[in-house]
Image (cartoon, rainbow, N blue to C red; front, side, top):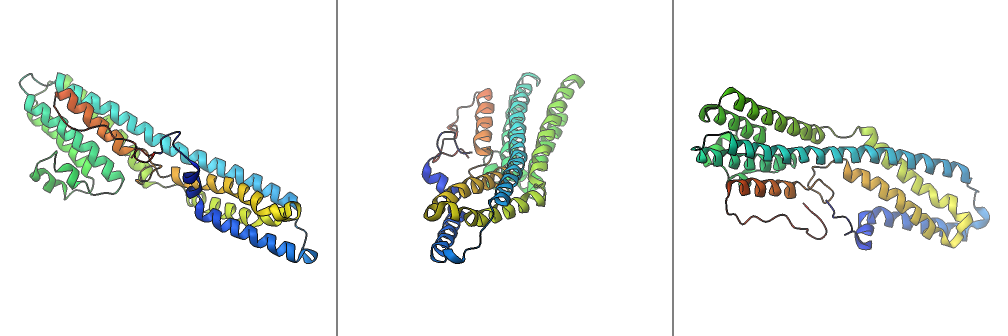
Length: 294
């Protein structure tokens, strides 16, 4: 996630640099052809271009609103994961017997492993190096045979509670409620990850935006003349930026600078849960790297 207020001109230009450069070259070409062969230039009506620009702007705005809704839902689900992780750690401390300190620590460490595994699962990255510091070698070998590693971790955690915690029915229900909420949050994240925007939202906005940018200098050159590259490129930049914003926001778990900051969130969860155990640890909150929180 790009930290608010850290964007600068260089970043903005790199954001759409390549298509903007192609557009500028096209604008210069159209302007040069017009100035050289002005007497042979076919008049290009302005009204259809205006209507097309308005339609493309509305389409891009609608698509971007949908893309941001996906990003915000992803962030909301991770906010719920933070809250229920704290609830799980609190229940482990207060509902288990006073003499179950080892079990309490094991459960919390397993949950830390779970949130890190979920982060890597959503990013399609291997979790084994991260899990090696939190789980036993036997547990990791068992997990290597699973398709959904985070779900397998939380399932085994539930089994451990049922087998070893010796809880009454009321306390067991409290844990089960928390596990259900964790599963609901994970399921929502996987739905976003595995269900991209419809193809119409992925293909048509790019097609219409690029077509409009190609037609733009043809409609402006008779009015702006030699200044056409400046005016056309400025307008084209706005449309290309809108197109790129939607592309970046629609997939919030791709491990890019525009994603939900999963590393920051999971590290914060680990710090909170370890603090609850009273463990001394050298883990620090994630820091901004070149204006980005990962």
